[in-house]
Image (cartoon, rainbow over all chains, first blue to last red):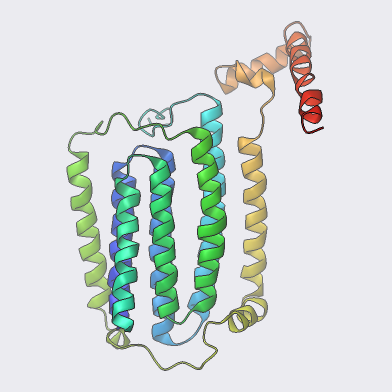
Length: 99
Length: 215
């Protein structure tokens, strides 16, 4: 398969994740959609690394995985903290910081 | 053969992504994301990056998703009641996303990268296997490797601080300012002392019963 197929698939997955972030209300699902977008970026990185023919893009993809894991850990910690304080798990209700 | 595998895993990845967005229950969203991650691992294998595919399955689909499942089980998959606080949001969002997709595709495909239309160069047998990636990580990219490990440690500590058990005098206070005022007054000791004593008596009884349970 040509590399451009992978790139088009990656941008399609990225757009799907963006839709999820725009229309979903639950912070859990928004985190999942962030994962989708990060994975789309990973796919593009690995595809470009294959296109160039060296492995440094794959190392970059591994670092992105680490970043995603950190984001998940902190995000889930926040969600648990929100839940413990008995606040609603809905990003439209959590609007105290909005001007 | 390669095309068949590509389209199968592409359908799996896309179906998983749509499932994450469309499922009402967050638990099903997590399961759809697992499907998506496995399909992506297959795509990584097609791109001859075995180690990234293995890390994807082991770290992502294994560890991170278990974390998600635990949190969904703890928080509960409570439904999203109101879908549209902003009018037209469900209509506008897909339009914006389609625009984003078209823009990304045009930006990449109309670029001057001639190698996009090829399979990529022929690579030696060890391309992307754990030995090659490990050598890169520990020689050329040692500093990013160590930095990311420190970042992981910081994230773990931060999550413990965020989600850990709060002191009981935090719970009742409405906001930070109220809480600080409460702590400042508490030094003279009329209201915080009973709270702490109560918390000590609350902490006391469960410990022996928990310890006695297995025995």
